[in-house]
Length: 208
Image (tube, rainbow, N blue to C red):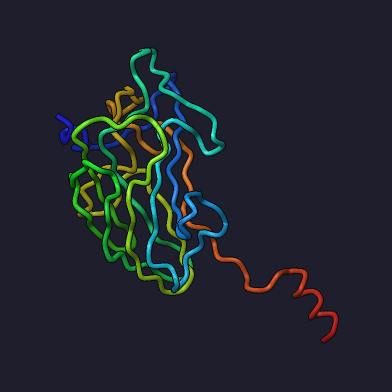
């Protein structure tokens, strides 16, 4: 039953008038457990952690299930992640390590060009909250950017979308909270910034 939820043929557009949710999935490269401008990719970065807050949005506001059933909550028993590389450089995906205790592989780690996807399934529901899902091992060339993909556009990747299976009914995909359909809040790695500040650059121009 759980695995069948992932066999989605086509992920449709959001249904008009459906209940709105807001969870938050984000990346972290410096082990501080948040996504900020400090999480830029460089040759020194070899791991990208992925976190999910299943009952809070990016501002930290509480957002429990609003499907009308008071017994439903934004817990989860499975998750899928699909990521994409763009920008000035590239990311070689070397592997993925799951961090959720009791979860086992559901959709295998597969790389397809600039994209990579993976999915894991638990033996039971975990309570709503903030969880480190796992870590992508990477080799970075240049200063690329890593982002989440809402849905699967890559041949060979078995995960259907970035999302998680929950007691909450969701909107389009039954009990599968999908990024871009059920919640918009996500944060990938930051764009690289110049090594010298704008102010210092202006000062140097004055003395040329």
